[in-house]
Length: 371
Image (cartoon, rainbow, N blue to C red):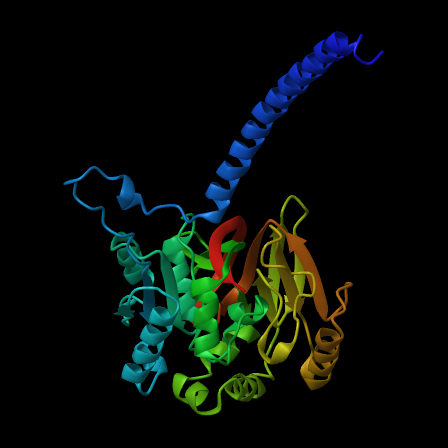
């Protein structure tokens, strides 16, 4: 029987073999494609890509390596006893993280940092670092507002309030430099201030501020805290100056806030803030944020020493609701007029006297390096 059907069995066997071969070819072809893709993937991810010079035609000139980044250090030389040692420390810090040797430019009495910062940008610096107090920071920032060049904050002053409000290192130059060189960019608001000494718009002065601008008692504190005293006792100099100016008369102030009706107060000081933290970790303006697109104003109206005790309690408790001695406002613009000339300060620097101030906010106009 098996012999009788041997021919058919052979035919069936041959057919099965042919079908199996065809199936194998289909699978093999697909498998080759998958394998090729897998090999390509291995080659892509398992092998290091050849250097770009590998693809350059023979005899062609080699391309130059990408230049190292350069920071410009705008330093206030009056803040340091051993400037050469500070320069060596900063230079080594830049080299340690792969940056080039920094540009080193000193401020002068005639130009506290604005012109130096502008020139550094023209010279190719990709990061500008003021090394001094908040006045140096403000002067450098004036050159960078509205640009894409970031500013890195290096502590060199007495208060370093902008750095404190941004939670940046203020006690270690090395730590602050590392943040400036390797940190992230953060956009912050900038306050714009018009100062009118006479109150008659005869010769108004334009300024920016990053922390606070004020007139009255707070400006008197700044004016009566000399550099020598600040260098000797640090922030305690402001406490000593404040005690000297604690007693004094109030002045009449008229304020126009945004589109609201004008209001009148008796005050010892009026402060316009871009951020809220002041010396000693106290928060003068609890709602103020450096990137919220708003300015804050606080009016302090104490009467005598007892009144100042009440003000101090109000500030320490961070209460913001209206009070006869402490009055808070949030706004986009404000105009302040006084009944007599009062001292004015901007970010801790006294600038003389004025009878009128106007302030507006320039949202997210400056880039600062943060951790």
